[in-house]
Amino acid sequence: MAVTVTVNHSDFDYQASSAKAQKVANGTLVFDASYVTNGEPCDWTSTSIMTGDGGAFTTIHEVQLTVQSVTAADAGYQCTYDPDNKKLMLFEAASDGGPLDEAANAVTKAGVIVAWQVSGV
Image (cartoon, rainbow, N blue to C red; front, top):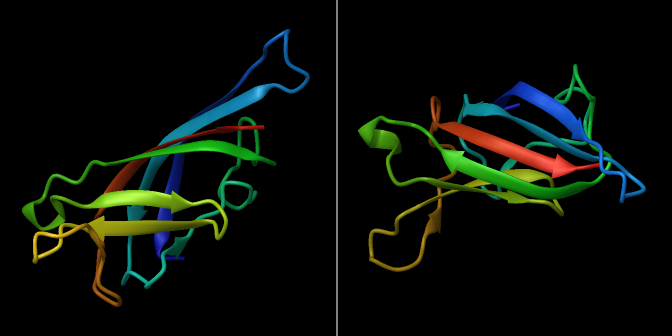
């Protein structure tokens, strides 16, 4: 895996009006190897990532990601989650001034830190 995920907190938000309890978890992830075109695998429904408090999600409702890297080399990255393929994708400003481009394949993104929050059941 080219992403190391850390869970800082996970909890259930029990709501009397819903049949299922909404679960929220947050943490950080760090890219630790060469970026792979079309994204790095990251599955919050996997028990290998979501251990501890509430365990893995069965259904993901929302993923929020914020790049927190402070080095100049990592400035300007945007991270998104592809829920269909369960992958994290990094984008950077295009040199031509156009829309964001996916980060270059096989270029190390080691140390890019992303804060995440996931909600679901």
